[in-house]
Image 1 (spheres, rainbow, N blue to C red):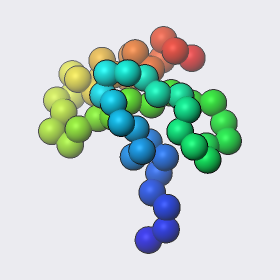
Image 2 (image 1 turned 60 degrees about the vertical axis):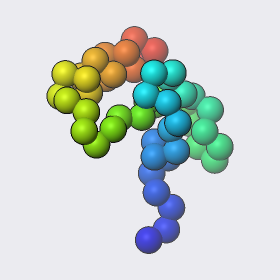
Image 3 (image 1 turned 180 degrees about the horizontal axis):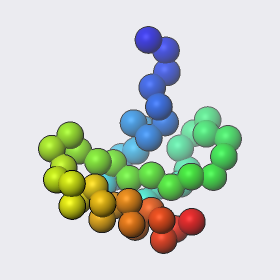
Image 4 (image 1 turned 120 degrees about the horizontal axis):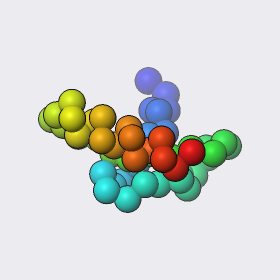
Amino acid sequence: MGQGLFPMQATSSEHIEDMISNVPFKYFVLRITATAAARDVFEKYQRLLIET
């Protein structure tokens, strides 16, 4: 199916990553587990917004 989305390469759900190879633009990413509660996802989203 080709390459997956680059956020799938994120290794941490606590440390914000911004250096994944072959991504040609600025970004911030956190791993979110499949079982994460909505509140956890929202908190990670807020953390990422602060980085921009």
